[in-house]
Length: 488
Image (cartoon, rainbow, N blue to C red; front, side):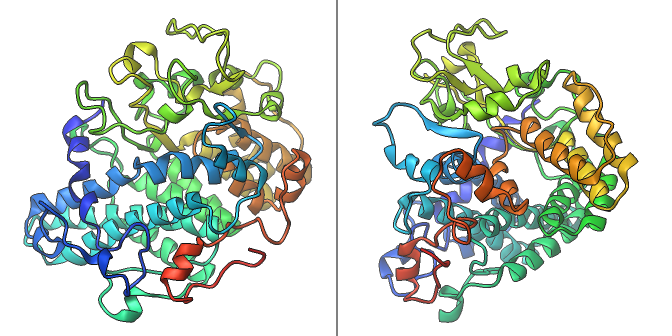
């Protein structure tokens, strides 16, 4: 059940971020400091409990903003991978091909969109973490809100460090020239902050919420995200412990995989964290996300971007129920009764982003689809991967086969560590395909990015394309304080 009040108030603070979206570190550009029109000053806003709540809601709202959930996100995380290609029509947003082919340069504006989108979320988090502690309000609620802000800041920084490596580390509202124009911290320093924030959050956040607060970060979300961060650091004993803590919480696999991605399946028993979105008839921009719209079947339900590759289509084993729930074909009739046009612009679309026509009609295109960030199935696969790396084969097979059983597949029985590693990596791909934007980053952490992506004809350069270019305009706005990544 979605809480509309919770979401319609999300945008309260997005409009008066202290750091500018286009050049967030420059202290030289006075035009960035123009007072927002018709909105309270940030320093005057955080004075009571209601405003503290609105401030945190704004951080959540930003998760579904254009640079965080739409083109920039899809370009860097999914279209760059072997799971998706640009799609749409050849002349529509042709710049997205730069990420499909790894021909982008540091001046490609989509890189700046991704960068500034994450930092805007960090800035909203820092406003809360700086201002809310001084508010006289219910202390238990205050502690929870601060924990939510830390969880969200960690999530935004995790997106940044995976994409760019070391980035500027901003943990408070900047005041001094040095704070307004910082240099890059190391990736290790960014990861240390992420781990600290998630540890703090997991110690405070509740296991669950009442219906009025569905969608907020929970203890399970913080522990699950921490396990994922540790997986990227190859800290396998910690991954194993953290995933076992999450599995012990009241989550369960949804029996029907297809239903996870329908409106009735939002925030279900398998969901650990997802971005909330809902269509409000007559006010389509109030709380929905364009994540679904830009991927909807073109021209009926969306723009047709980020379409499944033939390689992903062929990755599914015979009988895998997840294939039909992930790939929507031209000419197909959905269980909800929508016939995808025989003459649709693309042969395949992301079925996880599909919004039935009965709902899409309210806003003309597909809107309102929640974005699944983490599910129990992913935690089980992280548990399997860590157990295999630690030589605990029985545990690895148990968690892996729970996910496979739901997909209608036979259990895996191999005990050879290298073989099982590849099977788990493959299972992670098909279980979460086109869903949470991990595929490109997974290939990098697995050390297989060049091998896999070059085999798809992409111009991936080892030693360079494991991270993206720092946006050139950010380097210029910093007065050269930000160093470029090698090779760009």
